[in-house]
Length: 87
Image 1 (cartoon, rainbow, N blue to C red):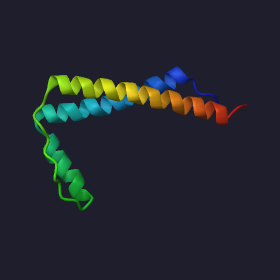
Image 2 (cartoon, rainbow, N blue to C red; image 1 turned 90 degrees about the vertical axis):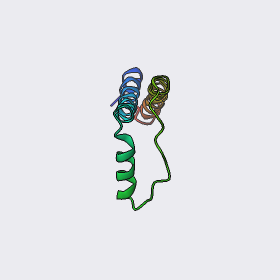
Image 3 (spheres, rainbow, N blue to C red; image 1 turned 45 degrees about the vertical axis):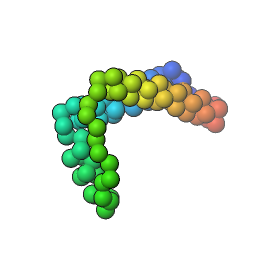
């Protein structure tokens, strides 16, 4: 099965951006520290991290960067997949 590079890249990039937009929303509403403490506690870890105050600029950069990085990873994945699964 051949993967279309652009479609795969778009899906992976969008997924990465949505995950980080969700994190940004959690920071915005003040739930991120509680969530971080809970997740690390499930792994038997103490949390040395503190969530910083929300910044629209940082959120936009985070979401944009993760989309671009996810797009690149999706494109590379599809390219490698297609080369390994020549039919």
